Length: 107
Image (cartoon, rainbow, N blue to C red; front, top):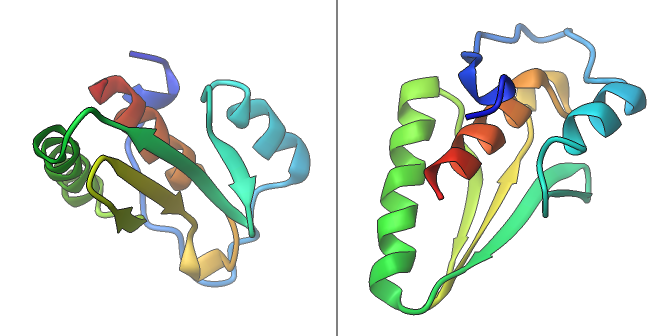
C-alpha cells in the first residue's frame, strides 16, 4: 500500500482552493493508469466477467463509504469507470487521490 493510500480523507469545506497543477502532477505520478479527464481523476478498469466487475464495484463502494468520499461510477458488463472530484472545491482535492490510491490497493 502506498503512503497516499494510508492517508484518510477529511472534510473539505467550501471555499477551499482545489489542488494546484503541480500537486496534481505529483500525485498523479503515483497512480498508474489514472488520468485527468474533464477535470476529474478518472480510470477505467477491465475484468473478465460481470461477477468480478461487480465484486470490484462493491469493494470500491466500501472504500467510498469508509472515506465518506464518493466517485461517479459507470458500470458495464466487464468494465467500471471511476471519476473522482470534490464538489466543495469545484475541482480536485487530496481526498480524490487518497480514494484512487485506496482503490488501486484493492487490486
